[in-house]
Length: 123
Image (tube, rainbow, N blue to C red; front, side):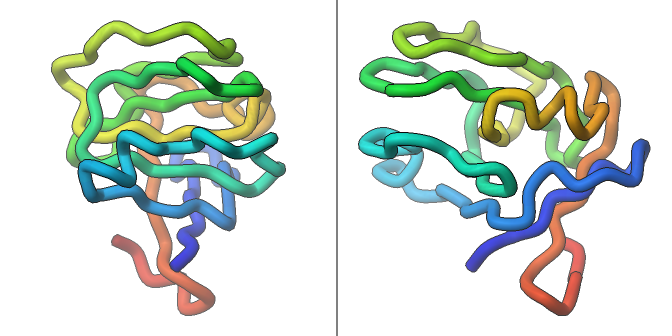
């Protein structure tokens, strides 16, 4: 199921085709094997407090979120073969195409809401 992710503070959309990775294997695999991440796509890793870009083919933006969905760290354009430090206050990570955070105006402290399917139910 795809999710729509909305920045409540800016009234902008970060993605409308965001998948969720909740199992250990799904989080480990992440975006590996993909050639790109199209605009509107994303991956929400739950739980997650750090990511790596080993074997990746493209750069991404990452927003680390607390349990309420507030951005505790925003990283723009992390390149392949890099890794982030561990963010102890992060509960999850939202991986997006490079430039998505800037395009949506998303900054640290913003609150993100995840809406399910075409009904727009909040999670």
